[in-house]
Image 1 (cartoon, helix red, strand yellow):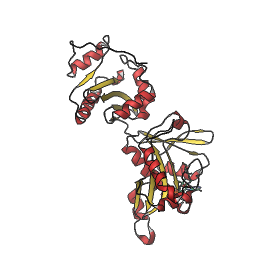
Image 2 (image 1 turned 180 degrees about the horizontal axis):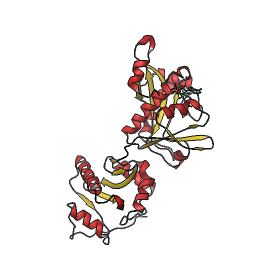
Image 3 (image 1 turned 45 degrees about the vertical axis):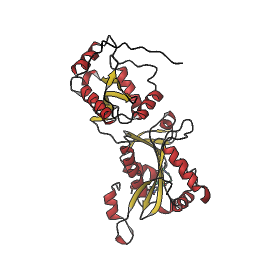
Image 4 (image 1 turned 90 degrees about the vertical axis):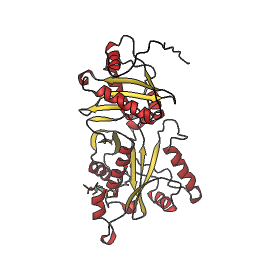
Length: 325
Ligand SMILES: CC(C)(COP(=O)(O)OP(=O)(O)OC[C@H]1O[C@@H](n2cnc3c(N)ncnc32)[C@H](O)[C@@H]1OP(=O)(O)O)[C@@H](O)C(=O)NCCC(=O)NCCS
């Protein structure tokens, strides 16, 4: 297994010198050495697509700008999610490229996954594929992706080794395509909620008495909420699954907390209070000085929780609502 960068630095390099390895995010400063690599890679193979393989020199900077926009979620085509392009450099030479998608949608869950990668043909078989995927996983961890879905053809032995060298676990093979998962988050403890947690969270809310799931709890609504409120919503994991959530957002003046829920069998351990405390800390960092929340009038245990954790029940405010068609 060769997925450790330091170990790799010691073992590799021409004339016995350690190789200089760098994963660089695509930028408008990228040089034409990248374009040469894109030409060498060609249109792609084994499901990896290189749409830029025939880009002309005069169009290269525009192509880079389009990739940067895509990474920022600007001008995405319908059904597309933000995707960042990375280059692997070894001793200053670009040897491979990878794509990392910030979250999954239904289409990517069935085909595509979070990531794709390619090593230029002249540099294959030197361990760079394993190294590139390992570095991409670090980037995925930095943006809080809890588990990375990566796919490759069943007969793509090199790619399967790359994934398995990086702790990939084969979940299933569908129509000759392997679906591997690499877990990045901890088994136990608190972490920020990621859009890919949606299905697991809905399951939790459905199994938690007192939590109301409304028409604004679809996957796209929750995604919109999380993207508008980075860093504010948290969950708690135990035994490898999500057992508590607390969603939080703000409108620039006041904070709001929703779906504070802990599975019945995990209650009484301070998980709910810890999640809400984290919401409030993050709101404070965002410059918000007050937070509200709504509790169903018949949710007695819920009301007891809020009273016991220092919240004041307001008798001077009525909540009014109106649907906007
Ligand atoms: C898949 C790919 C990225 C691998 O890159 P690489 O730099 O050659 O991979 P590595 O040198 O890290 O080799 C990884 C493992 O695959 C093995 N391997 C390499 N080529 C192989 C082949 N043709 N058949 C069987 N095993 C092979 C290596 O021996 C190594 O195994 P080990 O770690 O057990 O020693 C590269 O072949 C490629 O770019 N292919 C085209 C695009 C693609 O298929 N991408 C993946 C789908 S998204």
